[in-house]
Image 1 (cartoon, one colour):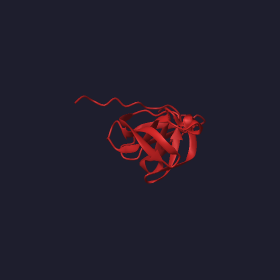
Image 2 (image 1 turned 90 degrees about the horizontal axis):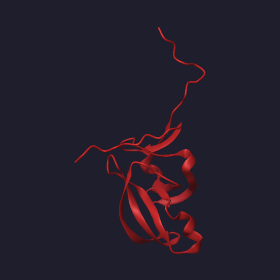
Image 3 (image 1 turned 120 degrees about the vertical axis):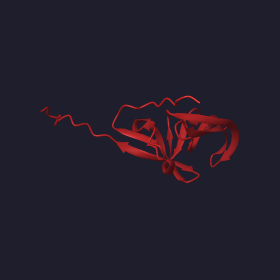
Image 4 (image 1 turned 60 degrees about the vertical axis):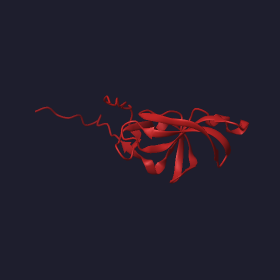
Length: 122
């Protein structure tokens, strides 16, 4: 097996895998924070990186029947959430090709930029 390529996201507010800290998405990509996952609260995102998709299956969720694929971390293979492949009800079409990540399976990384106090050289 080859080496896993990791993508590192720019920005100061990054969501990462809680197990291995691989970057997943930016705060700016949040569509909604009012989703429910297997372990509790979950967030809907426009896009993610460093993930692999499981097989597509039809699943009955809180909002009806959907075609979804489970999402796993590309680096540690941990379960993270799912991706909506197809929604059968017209009111749910906005979810298509978007990703739900469970809050318990990700961590928020805050990076601070020290622009006002640059390091001094000796």
